[in-house]
Image (tube, rainbow, N blue to C red; front, side, top):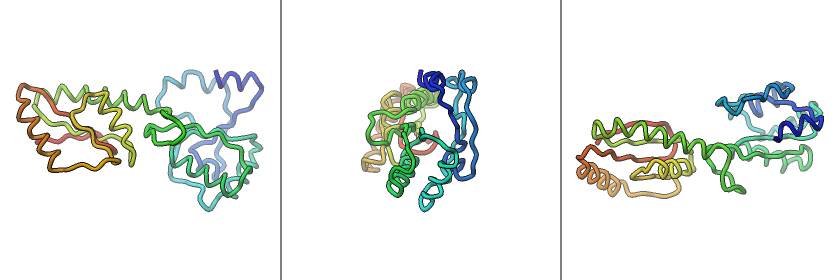
Length: 212
């Protein structure tokens, strides 16, 4: 296991809290092996996270803060925003900070990898949520609209929609005809009076309900 190999090799791990904010504000702590026991069973992050602080225009300051910690390198887990910030640093100051980026985002919107960490789990959660909604949908003969996270990427809507047998999946990458969509949904509802439900998945947002 990666963490055990590091500790057995005598490597000291320093955790920076709340992402780039922790770098600029000097918030960090040493991580011991006991801190990591069982964390795979706990949702969230041990160190916290934040998307309120980038590196644009602060590349030199970032490099100086990392140098002050006397780190050999950075292991950074994140999504497109995190990787964009890391790219700014490596472009502005080549070789100043040694970085290994870990593609960890439920959006699955990073190039260079087929599936990012977190995406499969998120699709499973979407499928479970839709399956729970199906009971109410069938009981009340409702049309359920399920909005999921993903921002400008439709991977979650697509993966979650396929996993939950959604009738329609809308993604930001592909335009759709609103008139045809409405006609399709109305026809589905009219022909499904046998207490069946219609489910629609669209990208970005939170689970919501709509009745037609």
